Each structure stands twice: as structure tokens, then as C-alpha cells.
Amino acid sequence: MFHPTRGGTRGGQDQFKWEDVKEDRHRENYLGNSLLAPVGRWQKGRDLTWYAKANSGDADEESQQSQKQAEIQSIKDAEAEAMAEAL
Image (tube, rainbow, N blue to C red):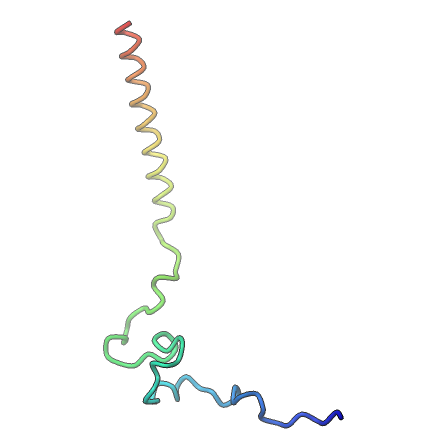
């Protein structure tokens, strides 16, 4: 009933190499082929995962947001002052 497992029955997982995918005729059929098996001149020297990296401008966004809030507050104060003078 219980037999020992055969070796090499994992679907060839141990034999898979992305280097082989680069040379494969049907490499477009593999998910992740453009990142893990880049082929062609356009990919040389490029950061292919640029979209997944954190922005270096996150701190700048916070300072811009605080400047914007301060500007809005100063405008509101000026409007309130003008309304008080008008009344």
C-alpha cells in the first residue's frame, strides 16, 4: 500500500534554470520571463524592477504637504481678517 516515493517526480523543479529559458524558442510563455530571463539589447544596463522600488521623494512629499497646509492656513487667516474688517 505504501511505496517509497520515486526520485525526480517533482515536475523537473530541480532541473529548471532561467538561463535555459533565455535560449528557449517559447520563452514568452513563461511568467516572469522579462524580469528573470531578460534577452535583448534594450534590457542591458536597465533597472527592470524600477516600479517596485520605493520613491526617494517620499520625504519631499511630506514637506510639500506641510508647506501646502501652511499656505492654506495663512490664506484662511487672511480671509478671516478681511471678513472681520469688512463687518
